[in-house]
Each structure stands twice: as structure tokens, then as C-alpha cells.
Length: 130
Image (cartoon, rainbow, N blue to C red; front, side, top):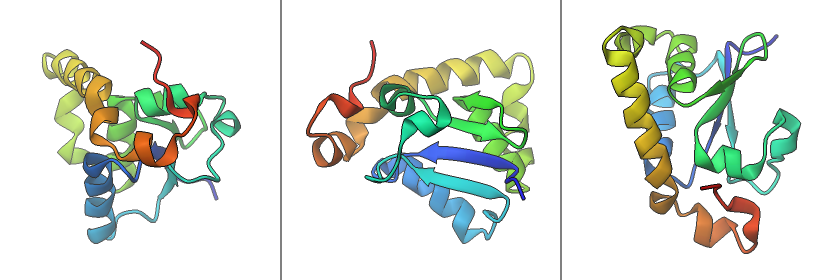
């Protein structure tokens, strides 16, 4: 059975970890496939991505295997968890462009909050494209 959404997240990022923990605490992850990009076993090429793309913005797949990026991934994650109503407003005009831009701004600084770079990156594996 395909999951309703696959989410590629960084468990060493405190914000990302809290978001996933919230869904797990709510018992809402059965329809989600959560893939930790900080795991040494993670291979971004299996998803047609580079590590820089995975570190640079939240990535995922919908139930049909189509790629998701940024806020679309968050919306799909909450939708798959049966809590789409929490994020549904983020796709309504005029909120959508503001929410998408806010996420993009966060994504640019997110690697600084993660323990990923010093802990998991002794090479350029985690280099984020500018």
C-alpha cells in the first residue's frame, strides 16, 4: 500500500523534529512515510534528488509519487495525517503567497538551526545551493 504522503525530513532540525513528534503524539502518522534525511542510510538519489535539494527545502511525494516541495509538502503531510484543516487556510488567496514566501525564507535559514551540518556532514554532502 502506498502512503498518502512521503515526507523527507531532518530529525536533527529541532523545528522539523517537533512537527513530526506532534503528528506522532496525535497518533496521526499511519498514512505517512517519514524518511529521515539525516540518517546515514538515506540516499537522495532514490527520490531523484540531491542532498542539497533535501537540505534546502522540505521535500516529499504525494500518494501518486509526484514530487512535493516546501509548503505543498507540509499541506500533504497534514492532509495525510487527517489534520489537513490545520493547514488548509495556507492555500487560500491571499494567504498562499504569504505562507509560501514565509516557508521559503525559513528554508533558507533552517540548516543553521539543524545539528545536521556539524554532526552529519564532514564532506560537502549537505552543501545547500545558493
